[in-house]
Length: 413
Image (cartoon, rainbow, N blue to C red; front, top):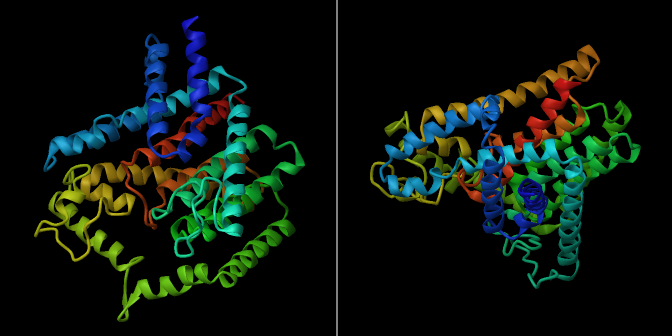
């Protein structure tokens, strides 16, 4: 009886994750913590089987290095806030894997959850764009673009939500319904929709990241023949140019602002002067403590110190995952994350070689689409959120549970 109710609870909480992420960091973090505790109680007698998974071994090594960084931190009590319970994200991925192995309807139910949440966000965003206000009273701000249910959207949350979760949504659709000829067109238009949303939300980084799954969907799967590949490529380029030049605010944000921010007095600046300053200060921290960094969450507390000071460098984090890891946790954790990125990038390159040289597809469409979600999260050349941010990590670790399941099924086949 306990196992039956426990299965229902963790499945229900997992299905609620897409709408919970819209509300902010509290609910999704609460949900995955409850799911993790229940998972431990359900698998306490056979958890050693999970310890054999490569994903678990890699995570534990990474966790070891960030804990060492915390112990050696300039202020361990502050660093512990980010690192001590970071292991909950390991259990979160394993919970997803566990549910998939024990509930055949989970993917269908999660697709329904995504469909409801995305449908509501798209409707709300269009409404806000057309009449200037959304369903709960947030007004359209021409300087920051549409924001739907995400408040002022100053941190680019709307685009980040849509662009990061759309590949997971499409991967599940492909896994379950790809035999339906309509499905492949639904998938590509969902990806195009995510790019349009990020454009209208004036989120430059997420827009460029949204092109990754579009590229993989068109050129790294056999969903479309060559004529359709050319058609969709031309259509997307035309649509993007049309939106940029039709909307004055988008044009200013994507053309004028980029030109003014990246080229100051003929000097090349990385993304913007503030981003550039963040990176220089963080690199100083890495040079000062190259092995284990200055400690998780310490960038915000040390950027004003004379030894690390750069004008306008201070912020809550350095705004780049890899530079943050170098500064706060050192070279070892940086290498771990970079190797994960290259592992999945290599799979994409092998897929391209197989498709266009060997004329065969070595990875199923749903796995390629899932990889695009991971590449978006780990893409090195882009401004990013705080690597230890709870909300982001709920999204970061969601695809790994599906990757474990899809890989297991592929081996069984």
